[in-house]
Image (cartoon, rainbow, N blue to C red; front, side):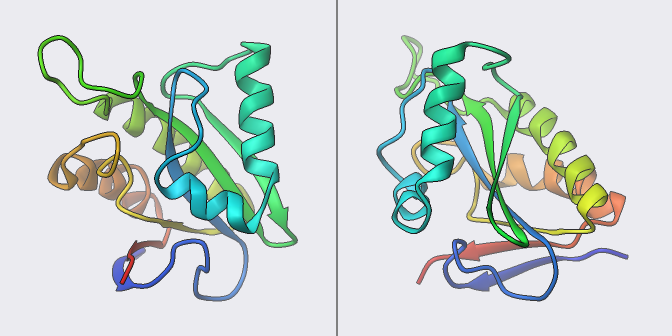
Length: 157
């Protein structure tokens, strides 16, 4: 049985052996410059460059899609588009899109199982996207844990 483990630490320095995928949530307007992406860009330039190129191409760049960028021999970054724009809408709703995050996690799960990889993340969708963890965690449990993918959630500190 796979496990969901919470720990203090830096999600850009995932623990454990073997293949790993670091998941984070991106917006659907091509913006990259605040939040967890800054920690990613500090360590590896490729995820930002490939995300920007993906946005510029327009090919499959939409909510729920995921781009996998290999940054080390056994490490991939999953750019998951789960945020609509970057600000609250006219009704005060945050940019997070829970269904898109869940759909993206199905793709992450499939890739993790192909690579026999563990998945690592901050509390995705809960920072700038404005989401609530209690609405995101069930998707992680359903799409990753229930399908045998060990998952680690990092609280920076």
